[in-house]
Image (cartoon, rainbow, N blue to C red; front, side, top):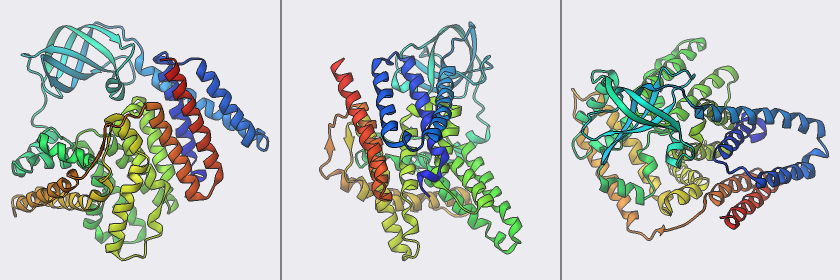
Length: 486
C-alpha cells in the first residue's frame, strides 16, 4: 500500500495545516512571511502539477482549503471566552510546591466540550485527582500559552477566590480497585515498573530507574503503547482459539470480543495518546479486515490521527502524540514484514526488533533532540533485547495478576526487571551524544524532509524527492527569516 492509495493521508495533512494556521493566528506570529510561503507553494504547483492537471488540482485545492478551514475552526473553538463566575471543576492533576498547582476540566459548561484550566490552591487544602471542586472566581483566556499548557489543551487560567469540595474521588471504583490490586500484587522493588506497564503511572518509579531508561533511550518502553494493545490482542485471540472450529460467519464475533476486551483495558489505565491511537487503529483494522479482507495501514493511521485531532486539536502539540504517531507511521510507510514472512521465527524476531528500532528513530530523533538536547545513539541496539524483555515481563506480569491467588510469579518478574536494568546500564556507560541544540523550525523541517526523501528512495519516485527539497528550502528560509528578525 502506498500514500497514493491512502486518501485520508492527504485529508489529515491539510487538517493539520488548518490547526497550525489557527495557532499562528492565535499567537500573532502570522506575518508577511506567510504570503511568501503561499507564493512558493503556488509556484511549486505551477511547475509540477497545474500544467497537466489544471481542473483536478483546482478541485482538490478547493476541497483541501475547506479541510484547512475545519482545522482552523476546530482549534479556535477551544479558546472562546466563557461568561460565568462559578465553576464545577474535575481535578485532573495535582502538583505540590509552595501551593497546589491544579489542572482540571470545567464540567457542565455551555460549550460542547469540557474546557481545561489551571489554578492554584493553598498547600494545606487536601485535594486529589478526580475530586470535584466548586470554584468562584474569574476565568481568563491565556494569551500566550506555554508549550506545556498548549500540549495539554489548557487555554484558561482560573483565579480561585472561593472554593469548596463537591465530591471526592471514588476509592471503590473499578479503576481504583484495579490500580490498588496492581500495586499490592508486586514487590516493592518492581512495583514501580508494574504500575508503569499496567496502569500507565510512572510516579512510582525511582529517580535512578528513570535515569537509566532515559539515558539509554528506552523511556518509550515504559509508556502504555501499541505494544500493550498487541500483547492483549494476542492473549485474547489465543483464549478464543475455539472460534476456528465454528462457521466462518461467526469469526467476526471473535474480533468483536477482542475489541471489547481492549476497550475495557483502556478504561482502567491512565489516559495516553498512544493508547488511544493503538486502540482506534485496532478497531479500524478489524472493520477493514471484515469488510475488505485487507488493511491499508497508512490510511488507518491517518484516519486515526484525523479523528483524535478533530476531537482534541491541541493533541498536535503533545510530544507523546507526535512521537507515537511518527514512530508508527514510519513502520506503516515501510512494510518490511512482507519481505521476511518466510524467515525462521528467531531471525524474524531479531531482525524485526532491530529494524523497528531504526525506523521508529528515523523520523523521531530530530524532535527528541530538539526537546531534550540529547539522543541515545545506542538505543537501537539496546532495544533488541530490552524490547524482548519488556514483552516477556508484560506476559509474566499479566499471569501474576490473573493467578496471584494460585501461584506466585513475582520473583520471576523481579529477576527479569533486574536483567533489564543490567542490560540498559551497559549502554549507559558507553559514550553518548549530548548538549545538542536544534531549533524547532529545523527539527520539524528535518522530519518532513526525512519522510519525503526516505519514502521517495523506497518507492523509487523522484516526485517525493522534489517535494522534500521544496519543503527543506521553505523551512530553511523560514528559520533564517525568524533568526534575522529576532
